Length: 83
Image (cartoon, rainbow, N blue to C red):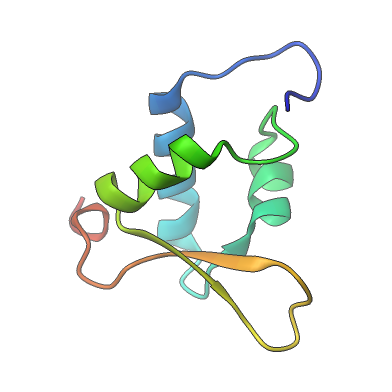
């Protein structure tokens, strides 16, 4: 779902997520990414998540004490960490 009128290309989304997660070594929840990057989406697109997993080594994990949120991280040794 889109928040407001703005639409973003996948490559813009990918690069923004990759850059934010490189800086956040402990990872971030979707809501944190969305708010920090001012992303125009309420929820991430499942197809885009799959592409991020393949292209930048995205991993999403539930953590104790974080409620229902999945923490997004770049996998250790992924291509994106070498950029």
